[in-house]
Amino acid sequence: MPPDSDNKPQKNIIETIRSLFGLNNTAPGKDGLPPKSGFNIWYVLLFFLFLTSLQQFLFAPKVETIPYSQFKQYVAAGKVSTLTIDPENIHGTLTEKPGQGFTTVRVNDPGLVKDLDDHNINYSGQTENKFLSFFLSWIVPIGIFFLIWRFFMKKMGPGMGVMSFSKNKAKIFAGSETKVSFADVAGIDEAKEELQEVVEFLSNPGKFQKLGGRIPKGVLLVGPPGTGKTLLAKAVAGEAKVPFFSISGSEFVEMFVGVGAARVRDLFSQAAKQAPCIIFIDELDALGKARGMNVMGGHDEREQTLNQLLVEMDGFETNKGVIIMSATNRPEILDPALLRPGRFDRQVLVDRPDINGREAILKIHSKNVLLGPEVDLRKIAGRTPGFVGADLANLVNESALLAARKNKETVEAAEFDEAIDRVVGGLEKKNRIMNTKEKEIVTFHESGHAIVAESLEHADPVHKISIIPRGIAALGYTQQQPTEDRYLMTRPELLDRLAVLLGGRVAEELVFGEVSTGAQNDLQRATDIARSMVTEYGMSDRLGLVTYERSRQPMFAPEGFSSGKNYSEEKAAQIDEEIAKFIEEAHQRVRKILSERRIVLDKLAQLLSEKESVPGEELRAMLAVA
Ligand code: ADP
Ligand code: MG
Ligand code: ZN
Image (cartoon, rainbow, N blue to C red; front, side, top):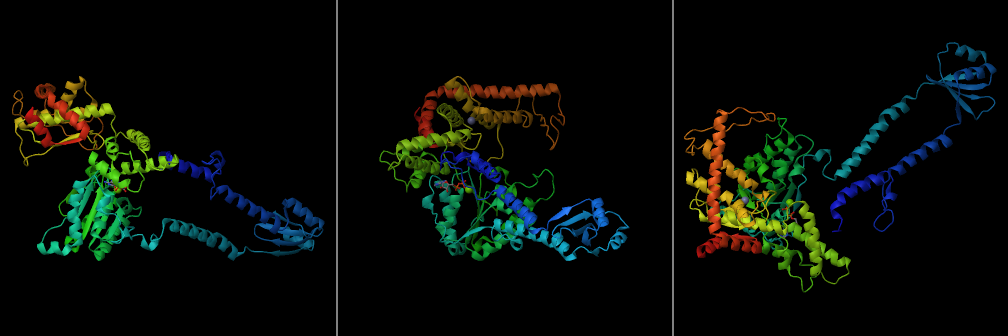
């Protein structure tokens, strides 16, 4: 990609406008010459001007417009030879200059006919040309509209004519056409494994039917942009060698009411004929936003389309061999109905790759790139935490371009370094890549959570600790795995949960002597737990077994609207004190735990900064020896 590719779309718009107004000369192209433009509105205007003047000078008879009084003088002087009188104008020629005509606007002059008769002038009346005026005022405009309409229809591409608006635009790839296979996807092995089953079903549906196994109807791929969700869906189709209907959620949502729903119906009926096959709806969130979020209320187009999708998904049997795959990077806004059993009942997390995954992805994308002998993909992977597959593909491409620009034979480490800086610079703007200091803070923060979780009796064991950024808010995460399903929680369990939430912040305090803003969400959740313990569960000794209902903010209430508490200000102050007490006690506890395990904290943080993600077992082993 060229270096200035990020501002390309903007530049394109500006250039289009420039070329529209013929301002191209002010924007010389890269080679110093003004860029050529195919279409310039000034040319069209000039052409019209030319046509009009041509008509004026060549084809129109030489006609002079004169005042009516002068016309009367001509008549009186007998200079007029013939006259044509129509309802609005009088055209005539003069006896002296036969080639020279004149015209004048009629005025109300009842004596005119008598005048003309008196001077023996040859005159005739004329009515408007009915056909010509009809032609000009009706046929021509309609014709022009038709041409414009045709033009736009053509621009919209085939299959979008009036008759086929309801036909869907799904791109269909026959089984053999999808060239992507699992070998082209790396770094997201867990997701790949889960989809293996789908592949097996599609390539041999009979086997599963005989055993009566139930295959998921819908598989939802969830993950940040660029992690390879679309790629993975294509790979499933490629592996199973079945047709692949690919459509993007936004393509369902049309400006015409009812079209989206019709498209859904059409898509499913087409797919049923081609079974076994895959329907892939990319960017499902464009279509599947929770219903009822429309402020105006009512039943809008998108809602209708979504309803139709739900109906279709319920309506067909999986055993027919149609599997619906879908991808989104915003699962939280999806309509809950989509996630119910029998619809997208299987969700596959497509996460950011860790260092091994990144190395594997780099390997795939540099397959066709001539790498210098000293290029170490592992090292590059180590330098690019937070990069997703698309970023890495871009990185390889960028390096190759840099090498080509320098006329090198192979792509060397220097180019990768330069490209990383460039890509990181771009990504940093989007707040996805950490600098070194941030990374250090995050490693200790997450280590703090993890060690506290492992040290407390009632906390869930740690599954995985990671500093690979996820989402917008969280810079790292500590994944705990509940040992069983929980419906009730006891007071000690809640207190331990509170402590784990504070672990990150306390670790920062201990190590750096200062705290960052990264703990904000933790504190909020901790406060929520403490508040619930005091006001809802009656777990505070001081306030006792009373619940203080949280005031629920009514929907659409104006800012600052309060529905009123059902307790006094004094009680409110006591509640706040109790909450603060719970938090402070937890704080002291966590400080003690982490101070005692300071060595493990440092070791874990070190390990985390090297490996980026550490499984829970490793932490348990470290704690056991310490
Ligand atoms: P998503 O749909 O999750 O936003 P895409 O599947 O469109 O991401 O990925 C864009 C491109 O990035 C792919 O075409 C591929 O070249 C590259 N890519 C992304 N993830 C991977 C991966 N895990 N392995 C290999 N290439 C990847
Ligand atoms: Mg995609
Ligand atoms: Zn935290």
